[in-house]
Length: 469
Image (cartoon, rainbow, N blue to C red):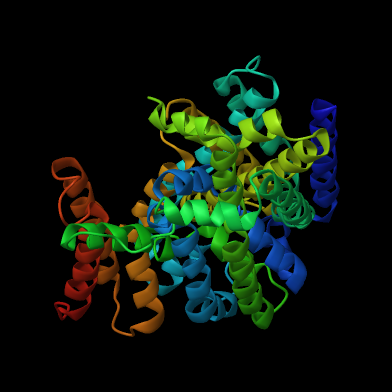
């Protein structure tokens, strides 16, 4: 029954995605849904893109293991990202009428800055996308009772997501996001109510978490602990601002006001609802303390099995259907956006300038070819990584934190920001971060903060030094 329900759900999702493809007539429809999404759909795409596999499986398990202090990056940092985008970047993005965030770097600076930042942003998506494919593999493995291996499940998941994203683009992402958001909200709320009752009520679960020190948020220790805490928060709060999926959701809104409100409401909904999987995960430990043994496994990914194992072993069929429907909704909605965003960026800002007379239909074809190529790259990354999804996501945004946020913010708010400043910012940031990661990854100052500091220094030096006449 559960397998049949999952299969039916997949068919419905693919059907919605393919139906949405009928709305795609040109590249603007494919990339930003014709800039026509109303507030409800825009908010749903923001929420569903952020609320992914790492939120349900990995963030919840990390909370059960390390408490609130271990999840400062997500949901705290990621929610602040959407707040910052709405307040400081959404209006600027929407008014410039661009297809990709790479177009901003080209319009504000130069072609070399556009290409270098576009490549960095595209590379950052490997970890984010791989996390979603890993989650799909885990779901298939759990549902099959181990008959499908994790690696085989990852491959199957990649094929399914690629199947409906390749034709409908942003329209497929938007319409499936709306459907999947409803499933997530209903499914996880019902499961939380059931599991909370099994654990003795919400009060008992919260009291057990408090007694175990899981509700302690601020770090204990000296400068090193505080700097690493700050770095984890900044990696997602600031490093994920210059991302194509965030840019697409802002610019796909029907007007500027919708772009701002959609980001704010989507971010608020995400922050509030991200605690539901955490509650379920800790309730699982209250119900069965033996799940804590997963924390000691050699493979870090094993802790992500807490929720799936609990649901399959301890809940009735209706709860299993709702949970896995919500989980698959979270994964598919994020995965499709994570595939489309780097595809759009790399194709538009790196490849298209090489063929300046390309027609719009040829561009659409090239987009789909790059989509397949990036999916294969993310698939290989997922198959060879042993990190948790939470770790994958954090590592992904370190790249854009040290290379792209400073040129973006300076380009909007500092008139003296120049092309030399932007190039030095990218080069200084990436080089210093790479050196710090290689030579002193556990130093008092985290490598990503070193990279961010040098990125700011590069922008200042390049922009303030008078050019030679």
